[in-house]
Length: 607
Image (cartoon, rainbow, N blue to C red; front, side):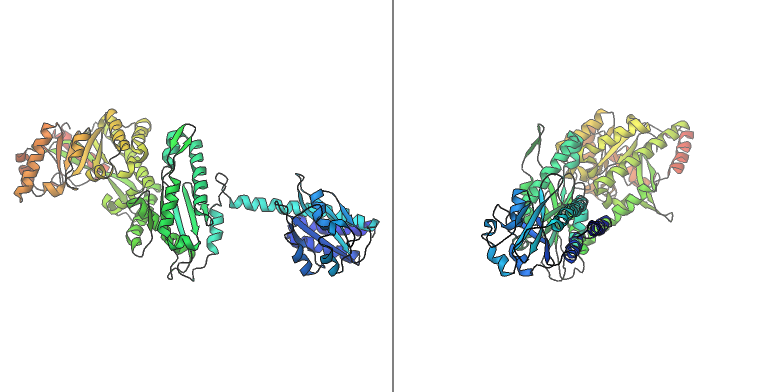
């Protein structure tokens, strides 16, 4: 063989590598061209995996039965030419397979296929690890000549280049499919796995979506490096607890488990609860004690599920429901669960869009003295302006405020709007008294509310002495932890007034009256509306007013709609009211006009 023919072979293979040709196609082409250039020669390339096992990559002219027989052999000093070359990390030239001791255990295999000589050279990667062998077989006993030596040198180098490029591509693909922080398959890998699932058999597989409940609190309290360690620990624990099934990191604090093992599918609830139990073992990160907490929603593929995406959507819906009614536990999807949840999801979507597009407005309703009708304060009521101009009250999107992220954005926006209107009215010499802002249960998660208020004070010039935080009675009923009390106490320490809102709507809880630093309470309209017609309700309201006076808590009657109702409330001892008798909720311009009129007739008092 001349040097020109070797050069032509080299150029062909390098061009294939440069164009990104498939590795097997490239090596097959190399072997075919070598065999054409040297008739009687049989070419073989074996890969060596990280455990030291041999796997045929290309051997187009060797019998398939022979390739199958050597596939999976462990390299060693007496494992034929290729196994020995890989083990010894040096070329091995066997001129006669029938007599060479390195072929002792395999000579009959080779001889039965007419193979009598084999010369093998190891191929090393950049780190020095043997990744493959290049071998030439002959059907007669002989040693390699100068032409064969040229083939071996050129092809060993070309195979090394092709394998190195292939591994770089594999590594890029792996990195594209692996989460760098946890080492778990990522969202892209999950998408690929999801696309390959079969929905034709009900119950064959299931999806569990796990949301890590305390990642944000950990990040806020201890810093993101600790949060990263929490994620890594969770990933390790979940992967270990669900093996042989697979888990993917599909979001910042979200993991998705693909369940295919029969044992897990037969008791999906128990399987999910076991994951949560193993997850919640105490961990210590740089001196900080943390208990990982998670919530899981799951869905089993059903006969009505036409696509895997439907099952994923069902699992997401179940997770959403679990976070509302069983945080820290597992909820399995069932038909009908999605009616309420889908309404909430739609509300979250609509409210998020309104926040992004600046369509959230603050409307105001005055709080007045029942004896003089003087305005002594205002309540800021959230309104959503639709794209067509219609205005929706907060009741129409109340479900959306159960979402912590949306609730925080909404409260931040309302604080900003109230601060702006306070400044604008003050510039006009107008004063409507302290302004109340309604908050939700989600606002209290992780001390979020106090941070939002602090930000509004710092960046929007909000005067804490003129701010009232109205906490609904149902929030007090659902939030009885140290974090809630810490937030309320912190707000009160800033000079912000705390008001218990909607009292009586959830049974009239006594505990908030005894434990919260209340400035005032608002009697829900369901109680105040009955004082004219129901003696028992009048007695309850009267007793409540008497107790509040003894506790030095102001009382505002909500839902005052008639002069006779206002008079009866006054007779019972109520001094403050709010309702349609005095004004419906007004936008900022209309409220400013009302304040101008009130100032003119001296109808503004002190709250």
